[in-house]
Image (cartoon, rainbow, N blue to C red; front, side, top):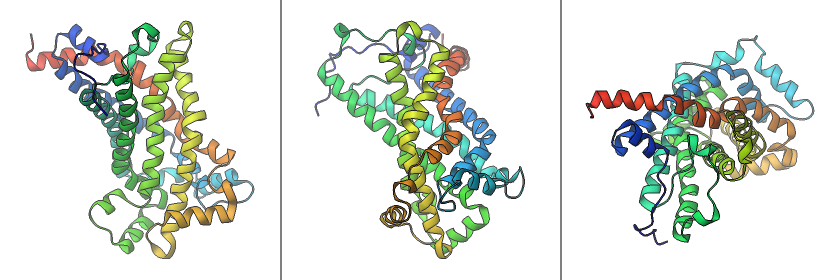
Length: 343
């Protein structure tokens, strides 16, 4: 695919405008904002995931082979609190807190990095961000050349794919530890005797990455683009963005992600047999369909449990990312300007 000509003039975007207002070079503003937004997302993720740990455990049981038949939600709740109300928190160690921070911060960093880098290399536009979402959609007369449109499509597909894969590289192993519990996970790792990249990724990496690609696409691509272009201009506000992001998470992203979450849970159950064995995804799918049909991977109850676990954090993230984080950007750039002695 031919890259757009350098003569094509792309619109100045939010961070570049912010750099002009703060009086700092665009390169400094871009790198600073990537770090600032990534750290902010990480802190948000730790708080929301820790608060929602009981919901996460319910969802994990719902999407495993440990529950079946009627009343799966009730079974999952009983398993979650089988040793008391604090049971869900007993599997949360320092590794989980660190992993949550890096999972969300790396997700934010990776998407911003890939979106910015690919946009620069391909002559495409970065995804809409912050105050840009509240401005009217571009008019037909402002349409970009077909070369830029094509570059935007390819870049928009690649950025969440790379970001979600990197996020799972950081987070999957800790998620597996929370699923099994620390003692069982150590035993399974010992029996698998994996080393290098395989051990770092952990069991079930590919199903985990597939799920994260879907959710990254929903949060950073689908939600802002569709809100910017298709949401009624007169109804745009912080409140409607919050509910729109939540709705996209619940009724779009999680409808697809639940199938991958169920695959991940069943894959881990498969991998735990005999104290630990390599996962065969084809066998996992075949056994699940043979035993329970499509219900092995999608039921309204599984979807609901996934929403309970994911929607509070991931569903609110577009609002937090595009409305709350921009509030501190100018002050952060002013601080950087003083530290670097930029005049």
